[in-house]
Length: 401
Image 1: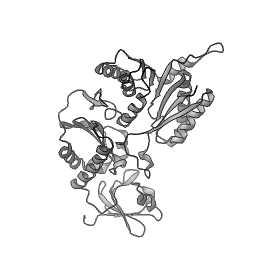
Image 2: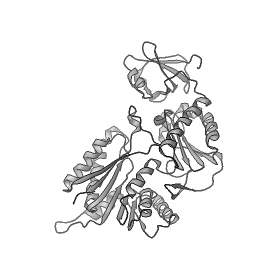
Image 3: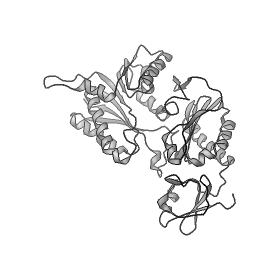
Image 4: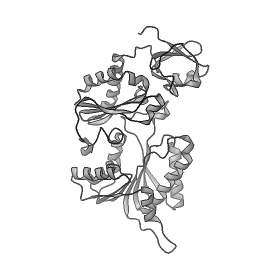
């Protein structure tokens, strides 16, 4: 047990969220802070009666003044991080045995707010998004070296979230050596990833179980994969026996990487890519005059767009976007075909997303049969009392004949 730490006292009625398990303490919830408290310091959080609630890290310059890391009186030292990271690793081993690439630590989902660690084979990628974690990165790196003996550790703290903590963006190799792209395997499919300068930390690891689920419907199918990025869904469908896979991706760099990955897996003859804005591409193929109709040509359509909104204020616009792409996609889907669709916008919940899909089905006079509901993989844990941990939601529908 640590000695006495500085205290942050909450206003009356503000303790319920913390007791329930949410780790964030905002400025408006605070009644008193000890004088002279340094940013990044470990603190005890107490309620208005002085009852202990948790141990966290303080930053006066952030909207999140305290990030609670434990509901015990604990020293936030190297031994603490080793216990927490081992616990997170046990979850991955339990629910994703045999995976070579996965998220080791997912911030709030593993009760380590402000820290992300991804594993790509024998290379780790770390991201520090809070001041408290950034100040303790040497402790964290020491733990990661002991637990994983990695060939290299890459930092990808080049994210806008750091500006809200008054931190500069930072990226580079922190340990070991890594030159050029790395070839890794997800579900026995090879992907070439650039962990140093590529998108985010490399790949969308949260979809890796969904890749397998969607690919179940690909055998013999003509597949359209919209927002394909580097080919996650497309390659799984091709390896599952798709007759053809057409990817649509706006960024030429990602489109080229997708075709390179197709070659790595020997499915380049099945795959093709269109470099285009997906909205424009869909619109061009579904806009008709009064004397013509759209001929549906796909047995399986996948919609996996990036987030359409990162703020509550733009949710209405996001819902319009989701409805639009579903209207266009349904016009291209054959009767009896499969639509796999995803939303990663945290502020658009599952019911909002479903309503947008059903509105599109109504406008196109389609009836959908729900086959499955999907979420993020277990290496991105969902803590129900922390709604921010649940962001990815998906559905698989069959277009009823």
